[in-house]
Length: 77
Image (cartoon, rainbow, N blue to C red):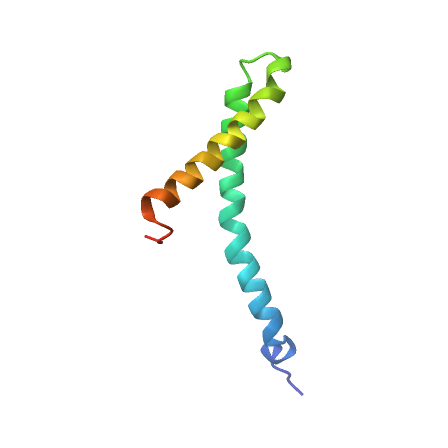
């Protein structure tokens, strides 16, 4: 007797996998870009300046985030 494999997977698992792929794949590419940027930015600096520069980068990201929402008033494009 033939059993359709689509019937063996519950719909909740399909939705769960679809949503996780839709969220994690773009974030993976974003993380790779940030990683390349940090490596290129910190490479010429001495090791003692790496730790002070990481909070500076984090504050710059937060400042850009707040500026984005100030300009667009929390509206999506």
